[in-house]
Amino acid sequence: MKPAGATPATSGTPATAGDDEHSRAAIYVAVIVFEVVTLLALWWFQTTFGRA
Amino acid sequence: MHPVDWFVVAAYFAWIVIDGVKRSHRTNEVEGYFLANRSLPWWAVGLSVMATQLSAITLVGTTGRGFGEGMSVLQLYFGLPLAMIILSTTVVPFFYRAKVFTAYEYLERRFDVKTRTLTSALFLLSRGLSCGAVLSAPSVILSVIFGWNLPLTVLAMGIPAVGYTLVGGVQAVTWADVKQMAVIVVGVAAALVVLVLGLPETTSVGSALHLAGATGRLTAIDFSLSLEKTYTFWSGMIGGLFLMLSYFGCDQSQVQRFLTARSVDEGRRSLLMSAFAKIPLQIVVPLLGVLMFAYYVFVPAPLLFNGVHDAKVRASARAADYAAVEQQYQQAVGVRRAAAETYSAARNRGADVEADVARAAFAAGDKAVATARSSATRIVRDVTGDAAFGDTNYVFPTFVTTHMPIGMVGLIIAAIFAASMSTVAAELNSLATATVIDFYRRLFVREASDAHYLAAAKIATAGWGLFACVVALFAANLGPLIDVVNRFGSFFYGSILGVFVLALGVPRATSRGAFVGLIAGIAAVASVATWLPQIAFLWHNVVGVVSVIVVGLAVSAIPSRRHD
Image 1 (cartoon, chains in turn blue, purple):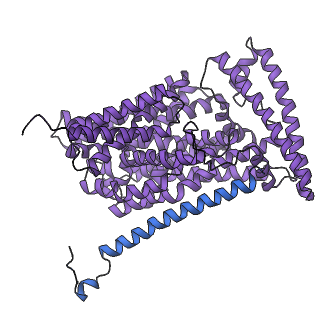
Image 2 (cartoon, rainbow over the protein chains, first blue to last red):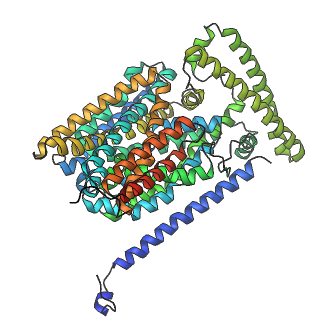
Image 3 (spheres, rainbow over the protein chains, first blue to last red):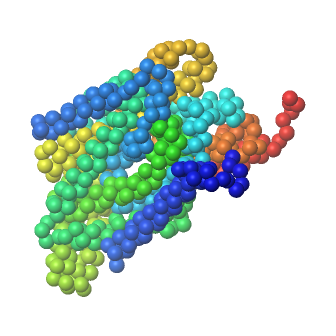
């Protein structure tokens, strides 16, 4: 585990566990946003072309 | 079929089998044969995950459902993206780092051999039977449409799938899945284009969708709170979530896919690919059915798409009843078509009031058509004794063979074969893996060479292939059996998920608690299915998970009598 107050040398490493977690979290948020947008699009589709 | 179509189908078979085997490397080692030495890229694994789930039953049955009922079936997948996120953060890193071959192997490390053996046995039983059903359903449909010999059709799909799975293991399965997914997507896109271009010049796609919408077929989101409706927003979001968690996270046929990825992160990405792509793909499949409905408003369609049953009924004692229904049907079809043409013309002129009246007349005409079709289906069930007969399964193949251009017929038939074979091959591969790893190596021959276990895996693949073909032939002759098999499988999904929740998320759960919980979960689902049959099957998954966790925790809290 990285100690608190990591040195500049360690914080300058190209990819850290923190970066990975951030990018994974961004993908998970993207999945949820994509589903919400898809459901809204479906709702628009069914109300536009569905029963009057 | 035209020789060009035969050529396309033959080319598909050659491509799948030869390239699948060619791409298999180091399959002389157990890890290579079962897990591809954890070397596969995420996109190939992701396509394999999707191809395994999308069987021919899904492709043909869902387009048929889109034709008959509309897009409500889509709601089944609403819980999938969330399930993929949960699995990516829990099960994927857990199983991958545990270096297991099967999901059930982990249950022995966490609980005991009894729990591992029972869950693996339940998987073998339900997946083995379902493999037969996956082979049977499209074989029956294709043999009816083309007049092919049924056992030969089963073998035409079964033998190549067993062949490349047996020779190339999981690598052959995955690379074949990638190609099969491409064939399916191209086939579906081709059918979509033909349908849109086949609409009358006076009817735009918008008008066709408005007509389908007037019949309720475009209802893709239903917020009804009824537990009796199979597909609602809630059953999909909650029941579907548990179903997907169990299927993708605890079923060896899917777990084995992400275990072949190059890293934990690539395993995650393979599942997240479905999280993005699955709902859009599942929108297109029933939409194809909806567009077929619109197409057949303007093009003459038979009362029954299953020509074999049609001929049987005409030659039976119920022929007069059937003729009367057919007369009603033709009348209703005429009324519906006239209303559709009036609607299109009014809409083109911008006469909104006239269009609304015509749209209402169209919906009424469609109800009369649906009533006639239901009567015809009831007569078929009476005459043939096939209580599970559903004519909508024959709509898509009939459309393909009668209205698609030469060459495309072969492409769609190849896509139906691809959908079936991709699922069967992945299931055979996982059945062989669980048989060898969870039973043969664990209980019978614990120390042997890789060559020995590989031989056992190949025998198991061939054995399960034979079992699936035999089940497929029996299922074809006993129509309702497929229904029974599907229901039988749904008894276990939630309960098996419950055991994995106890294993991964509840440190104080004991092996006794997990085992008793599993049995209680299966019993609870069986009880609900028997005594409350009106409860939609997606809720069975919730009942199973909750029962296993509650009983498992309660039994775990009881102190053991042994003081060791």
